[in-house]
Length: 420
Ligand SMILES: [Ca+2]
Ligand SMILES: [Ca+2]
Ligand SMILES: [Zn+2]
Image 1 (cartoon, rainbow, N blue to C red):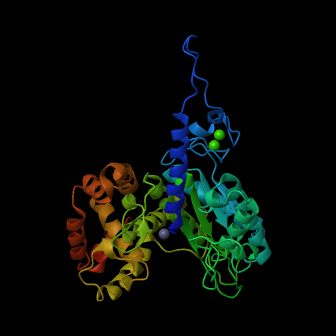
Image 2 (cartoon, protein in one colour; image 1 turned 90 degrees about the vertical axis):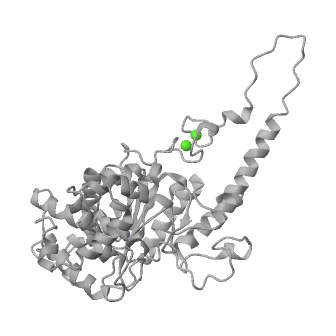
Image 3 (cartoon, rainbow, N blue to C red; image 1 turned 180 degrees about the vertical axis):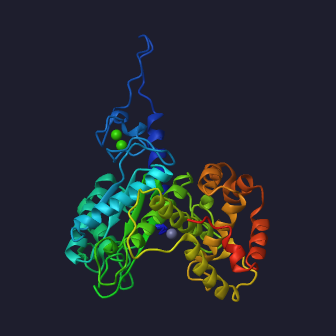
């Protein structure tokens, strides 16, 4: 997740403005005492409905977003997920992508609003997608530099294009704007745009990148994905299941994130900037990966998902190879604490987390326990409180049990994995 330090500044700034407005209101017009007191006239600007969605600004949680009047975060919604594809992604790939996100939604609930932006390979297609993205963000004021620069929306748009597509976007704005935030510095040489980062720049190497980013403050889930080439026949012979798993994985993060209402970010035990109750990296990644691996096989067994001929491994096959990897890594962290494993560590949070979650869900005798029991408690109890309440064991004690479980022979370990 990316976080801009200047957001805090914007929040403070808008607070000051609101505060000074209400100061003015308290200087009420003097009403002659001889007449009966009329109904107080509402201040004219209290009636303004800037985005025209029928809800006045003061009552509108998102006064510049005409599609949203209240904060729906954490609710199951009746809004279709919005998918935006670069125009060099095949129709077939688009349809399969849409099918997969809908499979995830059917299984785990429709948490929205949700925007999924899918990059391809072609530079012009990516620039075109960034235009659509930036027009939407600019018109809805959903950019951290918007408040400061709203008098010049051409500049806001231009900065947004740089934010998404640097080094391919025009830098004309760069000479006449200075501010403390990201993108306002003179040196952008180490910066790569948020979309450009996901554009696959070479036909020769298969790449796969996807992420969920926190746009909690604007009330929608925002995801980015690199070219889903696996859906089409490809020279690498990589089956579509590989991309389906990523789409399911990312959507599970959405469900996790939707259940955390806080808009505040903290630095967690792994040094990442997160919203506190989201949970530690290994648990978030482990649950998203394990439950996606489980779900795709369940959908195949139920006849809902058509399996490719060259995709044949069972969940136990998958977890066996994950355990082999884990055991190789374990020598580097024999007394690991799951909540402290981070991205890029020698002891990989995905692999440890997948087995940790597998162990936990088997212990609970409920494959759905993580999202069904833990998530609804996150706001009230925080992550570790929710964990303890849901599973009847502290995270520390669970960690200790899991360490002992890892000493068992592999055949015994695999018995806890659903035979699917
Ligand atoms: Ca409105
Ligand atoms: Ca609105
Ligand atoms: Zn993930």
